[in-house]
Image (cartoon, rainbow, N blue to C red; front, side):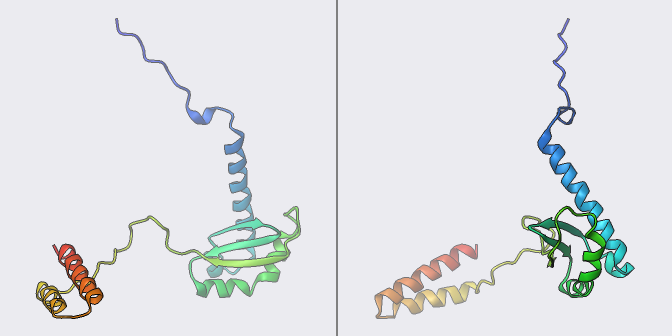
Length: 151
């Protein structure tokens, strides 16, 4: 009779203070974001994506510079709304624009614009008639590289 494989506890069932700390930070940021969004007009509230407090500064993240400039008009209202919920006083608000994420392949990748095979051959043949050896070597390397990349 085959033996039963050992069972493992799911990793989240263990007490993990680090994960608990991060979850509490996320919850705090979400509560803070909801409070900020309640102060803002509906169209502008949708554009406030994330927020956090760092060194007595409230950082608010949005998708575009246009929305960022609109959010800056509500600095005093935002500070007034969250001042009672934070431990340390907020001295400044900084609105940041979320840029495209690094590593995501959602957009198209840029490709090099390579010259035709005839132009690469022209660069090679022209380089052989140049008297400056350094320039001649550079053009030969360029034509070799372009030839390799065009295949």
